[in-house]
Image (cartoon, rainbow, N blue to C red):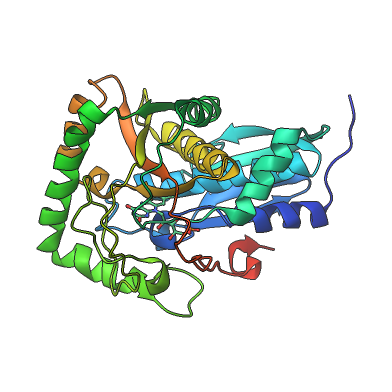
Length: 322
Ligand SMILES: Cc1cc2nc3c(=O)[nH]c(=O)nc-3n(C[C@H](O)[C@H](O)[C@H](O)COP(=O)(O)O)c2cc1C
């Protein structure tokens, strides 16, 4: 067995790619530590959104997505990874210890790694081009390999996703704490975290399944063509912290695979922060077989759509403990 281990420079490069991961309201709720040749991932409870994400599911999922990004980056750099999940029973914020062993990168490692640099949330309406069923199968297969399940929502069940999505928007409209948190974390200009105004569309009246509205949206979409987006639900058989971490990894795998296939994507979780609406999705979309952790919307942006700016990230010095 080889005793070769990645050097600090390699681990820094991989963590730099990991922090490109999506996170709820772009809170980037993670801290990293390098101990010898291992990488430690911690949740940052100070970045928890108590009104938006009361059960901390989004926080743990965001860290899971960053963990998967790290593993993809290390794979591309020639390292396979072994993860101990929640390794310290007395510190629930210590989410993972990642250890490495040398391994030749595969073509998929390079493709997913390249996707880290291109992926972004595109919340605009997509075009009327259908997503080929084979693409949905590829996304689902890659995500499922990370330990979660992907449910493609067929046309007949879309109303069962639209109903809780509408109800969440109604409930949040009068929830002062939710609105204050939204105002604090979105409509951003020139900051290294939060959701930028430039990436937030004005809610479109034709959206069959409405999506979370952010503060001060600067993207106006007047197109009226049908939107052929497909919806996927990332779900897990159990609902503990480890399952949510794995769901975050699966979410990352789904988004990077979609990006690699040329698709646009966005994550939607608004109704999942409200327990009764999350239960409704569990019953009427997942037939009580699994717990919904995140919804993903995939499709093709119209060729006429302007490119979106990339959402900023905090510098490594703010998230890496020395
Ligand atoms: C757990 C989780 C929940 C999210 N929920 C939503 C959501 O409800 N609506 C939305 O538009 N984006 C959502 N996002 C996407 C983030 O807002 C986005 O990743 C972040 O702003 C960074 O932007 P980027 O994805 O373009 O890099 C979510 C992301 C994660 C990981």
